[in-house]
Image 1 (cartoon, rainbow, N blue to C red):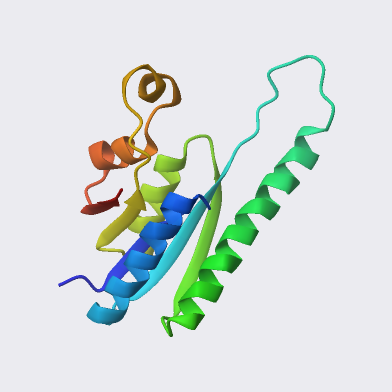
Image 2 (image 1 turned 90 degrees about the vertical axis):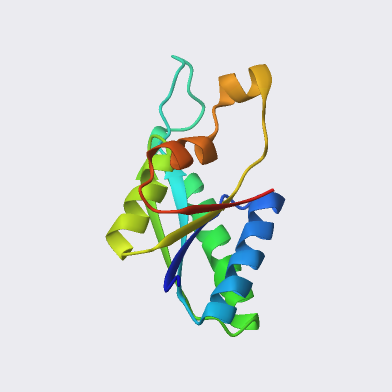
Length: 142
């Protein structure tokens, strides 16, 4: 069936649900797991900047490292070995798809916040973009 799962996380409570479910599925399938988190590229949009873009990127990368460390701890407690990956992206969906492709994953697992209407249009849905652009099957947790 599935032998290598990519679990995308953003550190939210909902993505934790996808992480937990994905690790459980991986354990049942005896599949390899890669947990991925995107560092979203910071682009200053104002002339008045309190912190340098480099400082902001360091902070964002630190947050992503924290999310991946938490995933590692959870996987260890469930006795599921994982690898973690991150990349700097303008859009998370591109990083998710590229990581899954590069790692040879055959299933992507991720959460959907279920934003609809104007909120969904303005914020966009990374899950919807993955579903639209990925050639790899996607399992969505809600």
